[in-house]
Image 1 (cartoon, rainbow, N blue to C red):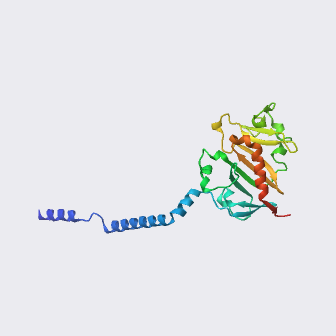
Image 2 (image 1 turned 30 degrees about the vertical axis):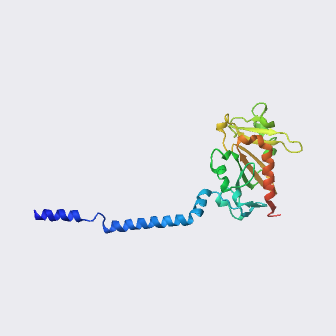
Image 3 (image 1 turned 180 degrees about the horizontal axis):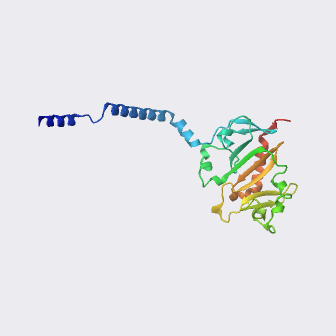
Amino acid sequence: MAHAQDDNSLNQEKPLLSLRQKIALAAVLGFMALFSLTLTYFSPTLGHFLLLGDHSDRQTVRSITIGLDQLQVEENAIRFERQRHDGKAMRIDLALMWPEMRGYDVADRLRFDDASQTNRLIFIQISQSTMSQDMSGRVAPIYTQLFDGAPQQGPYGLTIHRLKPGSGYDGEILYTAHRPGNADYAIRCMDAPKLEDQAIDDCQRDIHLGKDLSVLYRFSAQNLADWQKIDDAVTAYVSKRITANANP
């Protein structure tokens, strides 16, 4: 009976936490305190970093050579982190606010991150030309062979050309417009029947600039009414940043 009482006393007096558990708990509490201190000290910088994501708000100018052309491009306009460096590149991708034609800024981050506002962006891909003609130049020799039926009057002074099924452009239509003194404007868009089906980049057009650059740009069909302004703005933006021929 006495032994039973002694056993009960030992069980009652057994510590709730072992030494190992106490050490582990102390380590966790210490880490939490250190993390809290670090967060407090670096909160402005950390918060800024979290807001940026893969974007950059730095306006450092990068000198980039693509083929025969050299460009000076602000870092906050370059879409992907891996492309934000000086030197040679196969291509660079840009994302600009429309109509401002400016790169990323924390104050305007929702224009880049909020799905309801990203239709107000223009995406530009700059690479070395692989074709002798840009989209306007390809209308007569290529696209006219793929037209399906008679052209139709479209919106905003554009003409609609539907493309044959199986032509490689299924679900797309070609818009053209006559431009006195210039080649006809041409742009391909997805044939979205409803506004809610339109994407942020469902229209695309490519132009030739510089010595040997192909500039492909994409935007939402919701901005198609501004087609001429957008074309002029993209041309001016890229042309201004072409500084010299890398290999004259």
